[in-house]
Amino acid sequence: MQLRKAAPVLGQMQNRPLALPHVFHRAEQMFGHKPLTGIGVGGAVTSTTYADWAQRVRRTAAALDALGVAGDARVGTFCWNTLAHLELYFAVPCTGRVLHTLNIRLFPEQLVYIVDHADDEVIFVERALLGQLWPLVDQMPRVRKFVVIDDGADTEIPDDERIVDHEELLASVEPFTGAFEIEDENTAAAMCYTSGTTGNPKGVVYSHRSSVLHSISLLMADVAGISERDVILPIVPMFHANAWGTPYGAVLCGASIVMPGPNMVPKAIAGMLRDHDVTVTAGVPTIWMGVLPELERAEVPHLRLLLCGGSAVPRSLSEGWREKIGLPITQAWGMTETSPIATTGMLRSIHDGLSDDELADVRATQGQVTPLVELRLADPDSGEIVPWDGTSSGELQAAGPWIAASYYRNEDGGKQFTADGWLRTGDVAIIDPTGYVRLVDRTKDLVKSGGEWISSVDMENQIMGMPEVAEAAVIAVPDEKWSERPLACVVIRDGAELTAEQVKEYLATKVAKWQIPDDVVFIDEVPKTSTGKFSKKTLREKFAAERG
Ligand code: ADP
Image 1 (tube, rainbow, N blue to C red):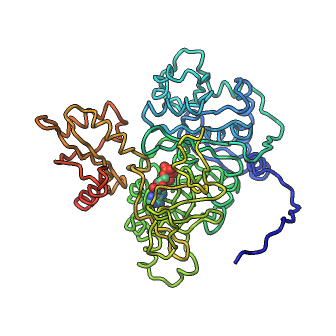
Image 2 (cartoon, rainbow, N blue to C red):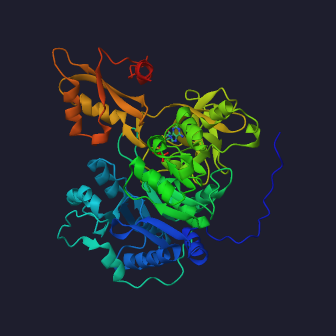
Image 3 (cartoon, protein in one colour):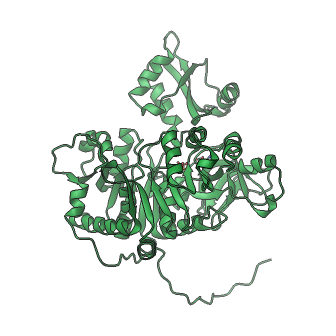
């Protein structure tokens, strides 16, 4: 049966843009007294207020004009989670420019590629990180200025006309005094590159509208429920899908924010949770595994939400927190392409009365679908939609107002989007009839270690570039600390000789240090599928079972 259709009667509400200037102006007006703490100028722990921050945002906005940065330019940041970064988070998009957060862990070639692909005109870089960026400067000819942020480091600053001192720049201008305005809510606000399975990283471009809507979702009680009363410590880096949207969400509701800076050792994070009476924090499993031994409940009585995602949260880790601190982990799932929050593990009334053990099972899922996000499962072979029945699995596909519709400059050939516009996530999941998602596998050929991607295909190609190697396959094996680590399975050419050390030494010249496999195993042959492709599944099953 078809329902009757007719031309719609239009609603008569004002069509005001959903845009970040509203978030900024509201915070400036209503929360001027609220504290912002964390790593500030000179790398020192600084206590400031929203009012001071807002003035510095206004100064930065004026400074971008003074530097001659185009009104629609991409502005790169090469920074940790700091107060200066939070200034750029608003000054750049509120002036119509696009914030491009550069992942400081990328290998030089990828960094050069994304700076060029995004066409960054200027990059704000912390002084300690300049040593990583400056050697690449000749490969970034279109970047006109590098604004160096004082973080207390004594990295040598080159004598070069492209270098600008951040504080001098801000001091040289008067703060912009008007109202920021973005007329079209679909204007790009920020962008973030995500590693492709093969080939180059792909740019995800967030709009003002998607950023505002995603922020609102974080304020929903059944998603993360953050509010003005919270003290939020984003541990997930601001170059990772906007720290999962926590900075924009926190400013929208006027929560106190603590910016941790570069010190990611567990003791330091535990200290920040303690010293600032943090109520909400977010990070990958590797982080919370390290922090747990450093804390007692009495020291963090206010901590109420420990958001964790990026990789599956082991049941034992969540239970470890519940048993010791009385606070289990709340798992979330998403991708750079989904802004990223698409599910969170808040419990519902259906879970009332369940035993601790049963609750731990619910928490081991990736959580329930966030309002406004739509998820569906598709059979990987036939493409047919699979029901949410708690047992059938399929490729997870996503749609919604903060889900990417395409990549920057449309690079992808459409492979990652279905004909009807849904994002193919590359994750395989089961969804139960009440909307809780459980990931069971991955179709994308990647390894996720400590929250960062490693492309197995790229690494295989590197290894197969060694003259002694006939074939190589790189698979993910479970790892307690890093969630996953790459394992290289190598077939040596007849008559050649090769050691694991030689493979690792060779890779050290090709990939970032943290990506080098801890282990290289030698096998007689890489198992193949019926169509002759590498059967990674067979290798994964063999080695994951041996090492899991
Ligand atoms: P982020 O690391 O910010 O979540 P990425 O785009 O780098 O974003 O990675 C997204 C991918 O990470 C997902 O498609 C999925 O494979 C994996 N992932 C994210 N959250 C979880 C989770 N809670 N459990 C298992 N895998 C996850």
